Image 1 (tube, rainbow, N blue to C red):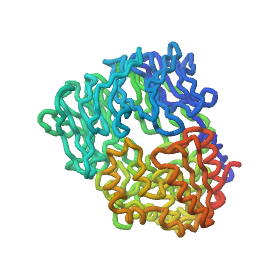
Image 2: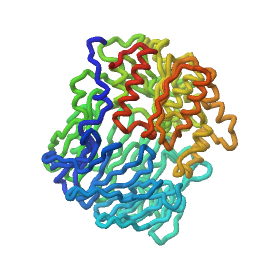
Image 3: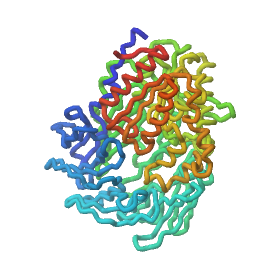
Image 4: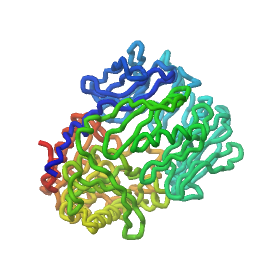
Length: 611
């Protein structure tokens, strides 16, 4: 690979040049995220990006996303402190430049619950002020900043708003890990159960939106099917009607008409994204846009008239490309790429693959080979996704391109317990942390070796969150399979992980108990599935990275295994980031971590690294 230039870490992991464009409600302006004095902030310009100027002045963690309020004057964003995920909602007036903290409460998490163009001056926000476990709903009046509580949460982990800006639906978790979809006819009516589901259907079932007249609820449901389908419920009778579904893949996304609330497209995430168009009025638009670029299409923001769309194309071997699409003329105007510097380098292409686990379960994943070399006996990195109730996808991923550019075959597999492939595949991961879920990873490595792709003596296991746990399991349960392991914010002790979840996760704790285990009644089981229980088995080098303010995987999860490594004199590196949470938001911290990680991988796998 010596003739393939190294891609600088700053190009892959530094701030994007511009990203996240959003069209204003009147269609006259676009807001986006871009650096200002090296920190990501909100910018605004006209619809052709002219007259660009920064309208926020964050100088710390940066702003990662922003959305227009329907008054057309305020842009909303959320920010936390040091990665603690106690989000606050901010509103910035682009005309005056005033930036207000609209939820200025200590140790409270704010969430945007609802925006609607029929109520342009108001935003519905959730706050767990009164009970850390539950978010009540407040009506935020943007002109004054006044907050008025409009809904006291009886125990819902999520709420659904109707067309009249009222909380009319909710998800009520049940002690067995299942959940109930609750509805009411108006704000004075009693709540009643529309649908009860067991634990096996809980993650693929939930409300999407009420119909315009409020008599129907559009929802996702896997009840009576393997995969989550889009259905319509009659609120009065409970009668269910199928809208769209796939036997194997869960519904991944839904687009509703902004005025009629009728379903326009349903998206399925197969090997790549597939959009099923149900509304003929946009069929030509989608067909035209899908033929415009090679990448996977996503339709983002739109103006209130639904005449101007912002669309994005995600590709495996290049930056994300954004266009403004005008429906009346059928023309698309290119806006920008998020990381145009990538165009100066040779990137790798990602290929889907299918592999069969030892018990016959079919799994799907992605291989990315270093450009310019034969895919044979390569040093390899098994890149394990987080969640684990998540999945890997096709598209541009900075870590994948970084590893491939450094000379490694990148192996990603959606092991049992991953989402998107239906409830049978998801449920096959129940109580299989450190067991069959890990076997799936080993079986994928074995397949890569059998194909002649991977060198069995030079394979690293690498991941964050659940992927970090998997890396620790690789180092403690099966060190003979790997040359080294990289753990980012991964739990080492399942008992302490579940006992220390954030308070707003407590209502969902039954899901953890049924899918992972219950430390109160089976501490031995939880301990035997914990990497901390097998530290003495580690025989490979470890790199561990942790955010000090992580509310999900506490610092203690890394500290307790690092203490054991130190006591036993086991080769390891430990990076603690005092100003980070569950991952790395600040570019300087990303640079520090990836510099250490690629040097670590070079030492133990033999790939390249940037000095």
